[in-house]
Length: 160
Image (cartoon, rainbow, N blue to C red; front, side, top):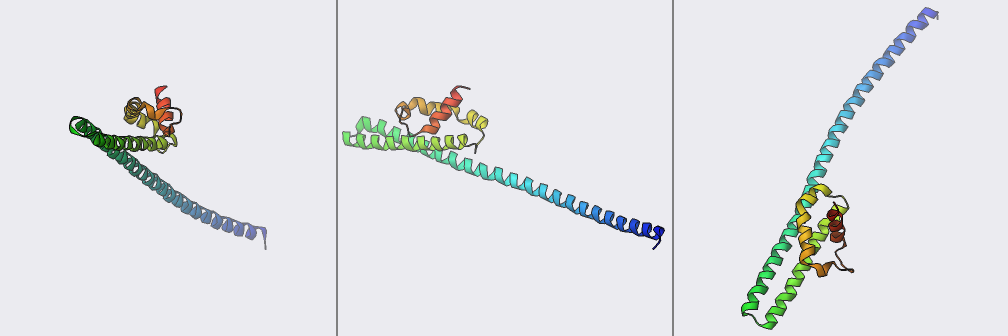
């Protein structure tokens, strides 16, 4: 085989290799575009899931707050016309409602601490709720408190 024939064959082979490489590059770019789209969809789905979780926590918080208000109103009404046994029973229920309400807030604070929810957004929306809970129920936030997440968030937000 002459050198000229060898060079022509090499050019043809290299040309085919270059064409195949370009085709493969096009396929890779296409797949990268698909992957980018899939990542965008996954991020969107994750945001929707996070919103669903937030709405569930918020719903539990609102339900427990409503039940606490009802229990409080019941005690006020019973103090006017009820017996001591009824008032004692209503007080026990009121304390249970306070505990359920604080547990709901504590779950919200846990989610904030674990960064499931954005700290800055939650601070704007719930700072007053946490401040009110701590100031209205100080006996629940003493040294051996079960509501450590509320204490952490309250302390963090009070300093900022």
